[in-house]
Image (cartoon, rainbow, N blue to C red; front, side, top):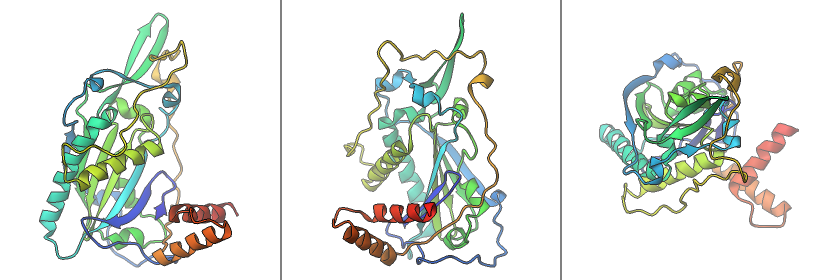
Length: 317
C-alpha cells in the first residue's frame, strides 16, 4: 500500500479474480521509460451521472450540515484510489464493459442508502440580517458523476517508481477542488481509469459530507453490492447513520454571519510535493504482525494495525 501525501491513497487488490500487483518489501527503483506520464495523457472516454435507483422520502428533504461539516468547506475533497490488475485469460473488451456496467448499477443502489452524495450544496441567503445557510439539496442535482478514462500505462508504471507519478493526479475528477465547490461540482465522483493491464478506480468525495471513515464505509458498501451482482433486494450489512445532531436550541439551519462567500471560504495553494511509494510483501507484513502480537502478548493485533504502527514509528523517529 502506498500513501499519497496530498490526500491520495493507492491500494493494490484483485479485480474479478485478477492477480495482485503488489511488489516485494524493498525500495523501488525509478525505471527508465519513454512513456508519456504527464496528466494530459489521460483520455476521457465517457461521462455520465448516476442517480439513486429510487428516491426515499428522506432524500426529498434538505440535508443540513452541522458546525463541524461547515468548517470543512475550505478543505479539499477526500480522494482515494484502488488499483487492480486485470485477470489473465479474459476478453479485455468484455471485462471492462462488464465492470463499468456493474459499477454504475451498484453505485445507483448504493446511493439509495447514501443519498446525500447524489446531491449538491446549496446556499440560502437572508438579507436582514445578512447571512448564509449552506445545506445539501438532494433534489436539484444530476447525481454522482461516473467517468470512464484510459491511459497507455501499465500497473508497473504506476507502482514501480520511487515517487508517485504526476499522472496519478488526473486519475481523480476533483483534484485540488475544495468542498465549497460542491455547489457546482458533484459531491461524489468515480473515475474508472483503464490501464494497459489494470484498472485504477479513483473516488472523490466531498469532505463536508463525510470523513475518512464515512468514505470507506461507502466504498465497502459499494463493493458489497458489486460482489452481490447488483441484487436490488440486498440488505447491506452496515446501513449509514444519516441523522444529524445539533445542540439544543440550534439548527438545523445554522446562520453564518457573512455577507459574501469570500468571507466564508479560503483556497490554499499547496506547494508541489514528492509523494513516496513503499512496497510491503505479504511475508513482511506477516512478520510484523507476529512480532507485534508477541511483544504485546496477545493475538488480537491485525496486519493493518501492525503495518500502521510500523510506518508511524518510522515516520516519528
